[in-house]
Amino acid sequence: MSALQINSFKEYKEKYEKSVTDPESFWSDIADHFHWKKKWDSVLEWDFSKPEIKWFQGAKLNITENCLDRHLDTIGNKTAIIWEPNDPDEESRHITYRQLFVKVSRFANVLKNNGIEKGDRVCLYMPMIPELAIAMLACARIGAVHSIVFAGFSSSALASRINDSQCKMLITANEVYRGTKPINLKAVCDQALEQTPSVEKVIVYRRTVEPTDMTEGRDAFWFDELQKVEKDCPAEEMDAEDMLFILYTSGSTGKPKGMVHSTAGYMVGATYSFENVFQCKQDDIYWCTADIGWITGHSYIIYGPLCAGATTVMFEGVPSYPDYGRFWEIVAKLKVTHFYTAPTAIRALAKHPLSLVDQHDLSSLKVLGTVGEPINEEAWHWYNDNIGKTKCPIVDTWWQTETGAMMISPIAGITPTRPTFATLPLPGVQPVLMDEHGNEIPQALEPAEGRLVMKAPWPSIARTIYGDHQRYKDTYFSTYPGNYFTGDGAYRDASGNYRITGRVDDVVIVSGHNLGTAPIENAIDEHAEIVECAVVGFPHDIKGNALYAFVTKYDESKKSDDDLRKEINNLIASTVGAIAKLDKIQFVSGLPKTRSGKIMRRILRKIASQDAENLGDISTLLNPDIVEEIKSGAL
Ligand code: 7RM
Image (cartoon, rainbow, N blue to C red; front, side, top):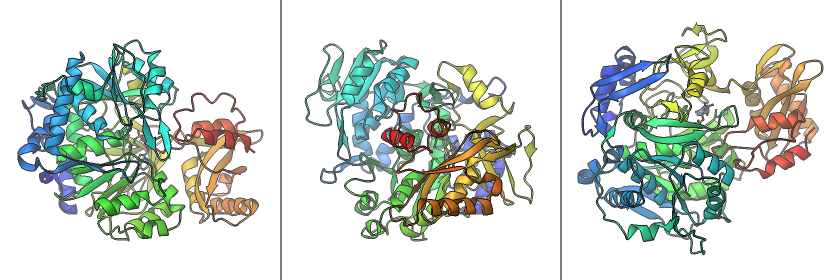
């Protein structure tokens, strides 16, 4: 599929220009590279005021024929998935495109045999094992809608997601190890299942030999079910706009939003962006360290790479086990060429001795990527110098669960990069900066800062929130009518490069001044002894609000807390301004994070405001234990 790849910066500019002036012919040329059972009657119909967005209407397809069937004659024996287990002594699994095709087809028959039909919702609560990929593709094969819930979420988080979309089936594993910690997934499911009447069947993959409680009539083992079915399963004919999957993402209220993705537009968007941003060649080994329970895993471990015919690595474990060199050990072992991870992981690894990096041969690496958060200057350079050895372009990819695919990102080796900048919009993406009053800030020689908004649809935009179209409209299309509002702020330089500054909801008004917490955090992060930080506001008698920073420092840091506090405030005064000086700086051993690595500022805001009695459900955090520590040390 490298036919989709842009080969020079000049070509990027031409393609970009065409994608804006004539999006229909631009996207129709790209869509021609996919396998359709029937082609579209119209490329795009949209109305952001409703909002309603339809791509490739009239087309019929199945995404699994694009991920699997059409590769069989050409690259059937190529490895599709390399699975790397948690335990380094357990063997890796290499699954070819042909083997994956057979496994997906057979498991699709298991779904059918258990009463799943086109349009039914199936919840997947699974560890990072190939069977998760097989189950999601099997759903897509028969037109069932998968809703993947990260297998670290609590039973109540799982139950509310199952209930919101009324899933008929739950697929899970009995138990899994991450690091040294066993996690009994089936037990979590059993608890959730007490509150989820819509679930009729539970399929359990036996990942470990531990005995597993099974409920008769409801639960069945994956392996036993496979014995009951044939191996061939024709791909269901889907409409372009049929729902492919639901993926829950947190919103500003406690209730998660079930983002709904389409079949054709999502496929085209995820694949086109994968091909271009990473520029993978035939024999490359591509590894994205995200979990499939997150959009990055959906688009850039499974659908994008498989549609493109790439070899994609799936890792079951954690970066710290058996030691903090695990990522680099795997890169050396598998000769990984493309490595895509989150800034939070980079910062966590940078905390540890460089010998953990240097003992592994990283010479196979060609391209590095980041996603999920703004990457600060220091982490960018650590990644560039120590992992990429200054030879690998870094693609800082900005996008969202809602956008389905990367939006603003360098094209590896083609777009000139600039540390901490996501750089330029990919073809088909039309960002604009708006001021608070909804006026567009035009591109000019002066750099500008504003809110990041999209003025036209792209193929992989989420079509609605499951069961709540009004919330979809209110959240994304009401702040700047006629436009999609990302919720992020951005800075743009004279050449049109974007630097995402962070969520604009993270603004504090101190003595009447609007202060974004993101630039303050950046200033703090520049301090050589600081790993990372989060800044929030708290009520203050005189200033209205004042600033509170939660800061983690390197283990080796020798300075006293008070000296560090002074230095941090001096740094802020000299970069952001004295108005942004912090009232309180608390040193902590970690920050509360979501499973996808985003700092949960909502919790810190409550702690800073001495309102930490009712923090809501914190079980979805990566590190819920840290909350108690932070609370007890609050200033
Ligand atoms: C892919 C993903 C979306 C939010 C988004 C931003 C932040 C993501 C970057 C980034 C700066 C980046 N989906 N974000 N990528 N900020 N630079 N390269 O993360 O739905 O979980 O989050 O993440 O705030 O709105 S997500």
